[in-house]
Image 1 (tube, rainbow, N blue to C red):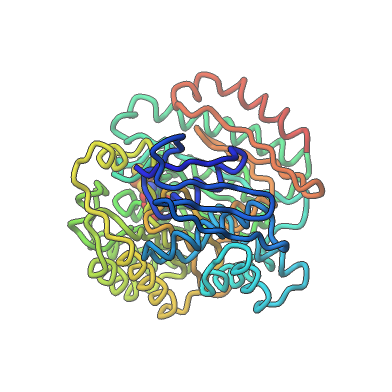
Image 2 (cartoon, rainbow, N blue to C red; image 1 turned 120 degrees about the horizontal axis):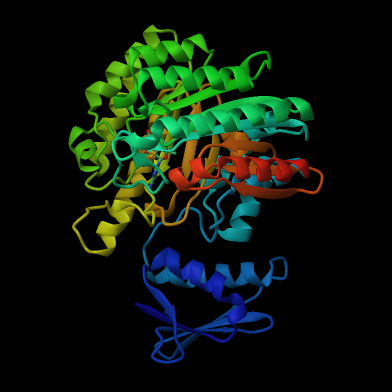
Length: 471
Ligand SMILES: C[S@@+](CC[C@H](N)C(=O)[O-])C[C@H]1O[C@@H](n2cnc3c(N)ncnc32)[C@H](O)[C@@H]1O
Ligand code: SF4
């Protein structure tokens, strides 16, 4: 445990965040501290082992930026740890690049800006610029254009690292039919509402959980409802079904998706190593990934995404290189690379805090593992088009979506940039009302618990409509 004594609580958040880049466990203490931090008017002092070091503030930076820079520079001298984002801890760093591009900065100036304000490494600043340039072309500018999200809160099995509010299909057998009815009811009402309001739908995204975890017959019925409610006659730009789990995909479900005009699907391996797949409880092997991918291609799907995770327990460089080689052969149209995030509520988090052995690669190896995924994207000729960061990500990196040109996931961009209203349907789905002129976002969460969601569907749909009426 690293103990810090700080003279001004106002800056505790910034001080904590920078220390947390270097140390796991930190606390603020009045005595027996390891570091004493004195924030003064125009400088910061760090005292350790009775030795004092002074960092004068740069007048071009805010106090918070100065404090973060000083502590980061100080700790970097002692601790050899490559932290490519520098002091930047925000979730959407590409927003900064997008704003600067709009203000007329060129790429070189933006790289300098990132370095000056947050000691961000050049390659990460460039990643933000590349993403911002792609996003600029796609990001929504029209108050009246919206997207629709539909969430299926069930999965074939529960993955070790996952904290999504989804339950296994077996645990919920008794409520699935009622859930689907409630969800279709929500779709019917909101479809009418969207028409009345004259909203234009850009994307429909059916995700979860796993939308394909229900039976072929149930899936067909739900898809018909989605199609009639939001797709038919609306000339939408993107209809995505995040099939996700290869073990939930069947030929019948793929042909239903074709019939209802799905543009984009995801078939997610997470890793191509069978031992890891078993360890994380995926319920499919790498052979099934390849088989279902091939089937989808044969059936005419020309926009398939694959998700992988860097830093899964028991994986190192060798395993990720194997995954990358296997994915290279599949030639997906897009690839989403997630850094493993230790999420509260996941079995993995529970295991880690209870010291149940879970081997996660060390920081330097994780950096190399990320590099292997960047190489894969280059070999596949995919370019980064969206990115975001999360708390508690191993290796403190980022999640990046890469795609072929014109196959960017439009919904992903709208969701991350928060410039488009999203009407979300299903248990735990969160609608977002965007007020473009005021640069304001308001959220409306649906009920998380499936049984409660079914019980209170009427009341909640009514209040969602009131919420959307503010637009
Ligand atoms: C919303 S999940 C649903 C996808 C689908 N159910 C599946 O598992 O294939 C989307 C993606 O988030 C990623 N993900 C979920 N939990 C994660 C975690 N704790 N750390 C990193 N990535 C995670 C996985 O790559 C997953 O494919
Ligand atoms: S990762 Fe996907 S399949 Fe696994 S439990 Fe989470 S939502 Fe379900």
